[in-house]
Image (tube, rainbow, N blue to C red; front, side):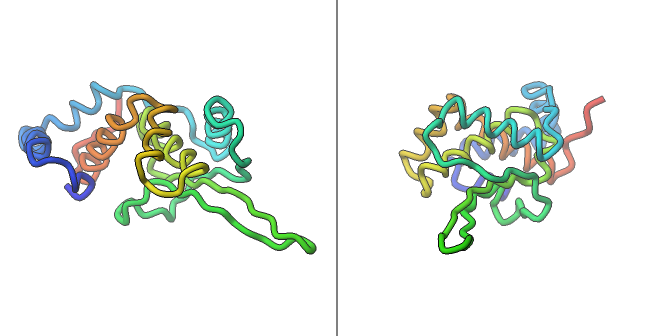
Length: 166
């Protein structure tokens, strides 16, 4: 349960009981039955810009949004936010990029939205501090529950407990 480090022991015991009884996959499928239709980088860009326009109008523009198969979830990265600086003529130009792990193409819609909100919050707040999580919950009120459930989904996925939807 490498994705659940830092959670209280009583919660981990409940998760272990779901795993031992073989009910974790079914629990997640019932709770999050629908996958999203955001399969392409263009569709992902549209999702990100729509959320940004709704919640963060004054934030810096985003130049690129893409699914990235090189992001290793094992290294605790589900998405990345980068600032790419390039010299153009005599000026230094900075562009913002958001990349989301490719495995989220097949994730429930709520988990993709949670990852996008997380990376958008980094446009304003670099660190994972109180202000960062306040911004996440402003954009997505059930952010913390979705983050936990996403970690459960990743655990179930690694254990082979998630069967494709019929």
